[in-house]
Length: 276
Image (cartoon, rainbow, N blue to C red):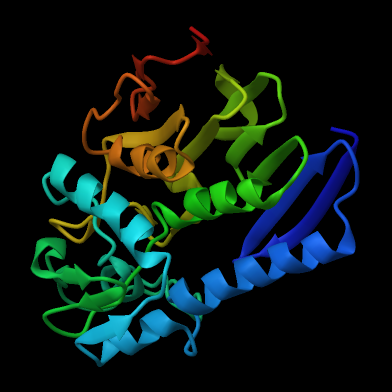
């Protein structure tokens, strides 16, 4: 890729590499697409559509809802309820809120069960006030959508959620959760595939608190410190990178790698290597 467009969006850094510069019209369309996504799904925005779920029982989340929430249906089932988009309230209670206070609240908090919610068309029905957080799926899903808008070979990198449409295989380092300057291995990402990563060190605060919560206990998971996943579906790869903290969900089209607190790696189908 000889041209790189770098910008900030949805609270993180993006880079889109292409052989030729992306023209102004397409840049505007991509920017608008990302903005619509953010205005619908960001739990950090008071004006976002999902903010209405803090008070209302039914909210129309728009045309992206079936695809995004359908991934959560699968993740919730396959992890026995550990992965859920309803962890937003627990994250805020622990201090990861719109003001980034990082000051935990007092007392316990319960995460509502995702299975008690229902999607009818694009309308989500919830049993009571909830704080929706699609962070385990949304960025990978959006990166895939943006890649699909580009009419030339491209690599879309949404801060580690990478979609490869370059026409060649990429070698991507698996960043060491204990030292961002080091790698624990490397993945070979074919054209048409994505790689996504998740680690507690990226958003950690207070006494060993981080953003990867087990929805069953409303507490940060402890056993796994980092996970990577890849395959042809960017949204599913992103979801697997979180689900791998709780379950072994690799399939014949997607791979996962997890690293535990004792630095033992579990490898499922990785097209690459983990360094010994």
